[in-house]
Image (cartoon, rainbow, N blue to C red; front, side, top):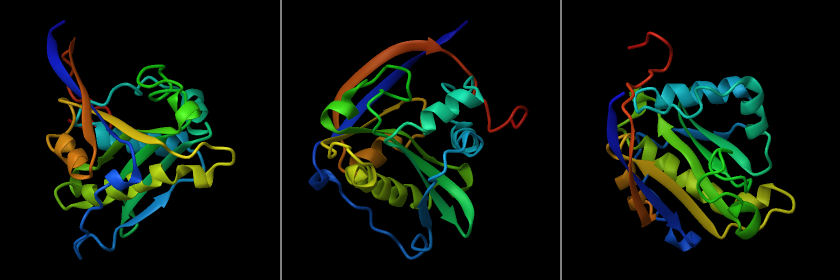
Length: 206
């Protein structure tokens, strides 16, 4: 199997003061962002495949219904969805559960329970909604929700750090978008990974 070099960038904010809110143009002001409070494996999988189908999100494609539900029901996990006139446009998923990056045990496993770290585990837009500054609005709003996450969970440690990683397989503007919102680069890694075609939002879509 052929491989490809993948660069991963790790970014963080250490204070709410680091967040640079996005300017919201009139064309985006009608976008509604709402938390999906009822854990729904079906809905979350739809968002994951609809947003990540063309940027090679594959880590969760093998998750069964029980694994999706177990992840979504962990205290400190939140999904915030942007809607354009009632249609889902994108989502940002926050993981403040302390169990590490999407429960796989990588990243900063356990940090959320110890020092209030919150990971932006997934963030993105459906293709039709990109290039309209919806992403800047959603990332700004979602990062603010990471900083006040403790107010929605009893016994939760106040957020002390918000972190995220993106890689060269993601959309071409992902890294710049995070930096514009005040995230600072703190580590870069490079690894060879199997060369995989984008899976598309459903089998046969491409």
